[in-house]
Image (tube, rainbow over all chains, first blue to last red; front, side):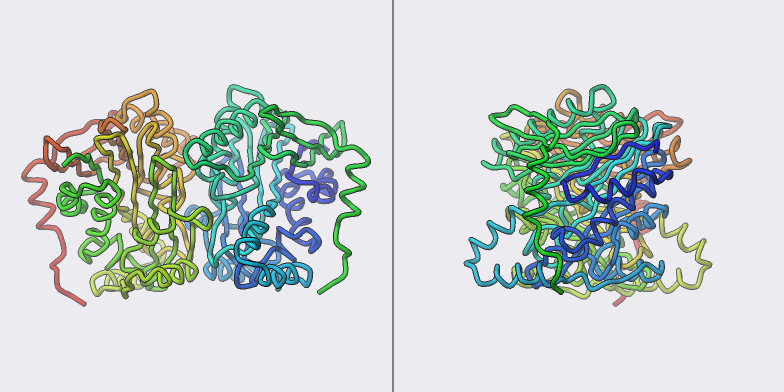
Length: 314
Length: 314
């Protein structure tokens, strides 16, 4: 138990808890992501992920290793059981590190990675219901729910890495990439400083290269300062330039194992696992421009579980 | 004639020359890119672009507008006559700004954009010849030639924008994205500072979010300083971390119309069009860590033309 892990959303709790005893930093990060990819009750990642406009589950994932800056990503790929494994495999190549659509699928098959039909009854029902709504209502609702799992890890020897995985925007167009497979936007890891990742409206996140910026700031600032500064400044910039800014939440972890998180939403949950302190769910909040963090209360955790859909279906 | 334009490689000369009288900044940038896309003698962009490993021409393009930070990109898309037009159209959406593969093609067809079989005899011959070489020889040669056309523009009122287009790495895997469609890597434009773009080994460029970094530095430094600083630091970082760094060349243009360029290669050609000074081909050089710029000599320009392949075929 020497790695520190931080991950976006309460849905990462089980994966982070399982991954804490894993000695290899990369394996710990990848296995925490896989846990969420394999759980169909979490509707925005992997199995049971939210369908695109055509009802198909197209997945994005990325992996970055901070010692070598090795990076791999897949985008808009169907039928992978664990997109994060394809991203990790791609990060070991010198070239062709980012593959999309059928090209990404072909690579995964050549690598012998497991395939899966990721459509699942509960998320398909949500898609069918959306088709009954007016286009405007459906898109508004769709664009409010898009929770990427991002896992960052720091070893006690000061290496960092990052893994992210998502089904992206609900009702997105075929072939759409969000920020997740985009290096510097969805995640970035540099063992000289730290690692960062983002979740929210990908199109807005990528306009600020938010993960790159947080890692750059962490060279001279705390992760918490870097997260708050980047979320605050970028939200202000987009409101000024475009009149609005979508939801954005970020996490960061420096090479010393110190962490931070920030959001421009009312509430953003995340999970932290630390060698001496165990694994806990935290909440970041933003109210009137003021950022705060606190541990999730027992009541909050209970409400979360009671709001999960029943685990049958398909 | 109020816009300043800067573009990567000598191949952009005709397009920049034609675009200088165009009043609209966005139209000037897009038309300069289209000129290269439509010329089959330039083997790394659009028509006649270098094929992927399967002999197919898959194209990447991006467009960014610096007032609004609007951004659009297509990746690994076949059969578009002008990928830059699809990228520009996508930049006007609020969501789904980056589309890949068949999704990008479907969008372009829905927009009524022109299609084209981009395979061309000369580049197909190159592909067939590569298949006869040993895998190692072929890939080495392939990875040395991948010239993206990047065009940056600044209006006299201080707006900037950027457009890039490429067929990417010769013999790349199906579905591969380079830096060109990746915001902050292939290009970035922010009218508060300026615009920047990169050409070279995409996988190495994207590890440093080079266009974002140059634009960030231009807020307080000259374009030339920003270009040299970013190319130098990133090349050093990759050599230290991975033992090598591929070829990287960058151009930048600030909101005042001042420009810069740098490369980690022996020589990189680019084109500058300025309202009072006309259109000229320049060369950036890097020798022993020392960067320099000079106008291309009449002899250099003559050699370039005499080395172009004959314009028949197909």
